[in-house]
Image (cartoon, rainbow, N blue to C red; front, side):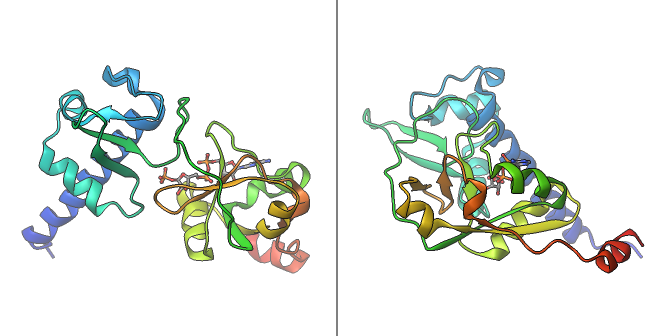
Length: 204
Ligand code: HQG
């Protein structure tokens, strides 16, 4: 049966906004030079230049910024009064987001693929290409983060209270993601190893 045209349009609209959000993330976090952009030291780009570089309308940008499930982008007025945009977190280009250290909740969570578990157990959580390890305040969000690349997900509990006691520094991004440099393995609680029966079930 044919899907009503209105639904098709809605789906296409959502998909194109997700595609645009990804392109904006690429331009602001990872590869601004591909768009002819040069973010300032704190990651800001003049909004007018950003719209021109990505060839998008202000209305579409506003829809992505306002409707973004994770509030990935911030728009404000710079010191010169002109509007500007940056990503709230997740950069691989060198930016100083000027975050101030904050006391985290006692526990934080990190969702990842089970394939990474052995390595994480051995060496802890590393930031990879990004500036920080990203941690969530709830297991639902951690699960969504871990599920991004497909495959079975495992949720690790981070003893952020003990880390703070031991001098590790935490930051909170404008969109509520907790950030830290590294999580050594002694602060991670990982689920028990699966039993051999569970391993068998998984293979079926
Ligand atoms: C893993 C998205 C093996 C780590 C999300 C993760 C988040 C290790 C991957 C944000 C490891 C890095 C960040 C070790 C860490 N051995 N694997 N020792 N240490 N890893 O994408 O946390 O949608 O850089 O578990 O929602 O997945 O882009 O980090 O799987 O907030 O806004 O190495 O990105 O936000 O992957 O995601 P990522 P992440 P956006």
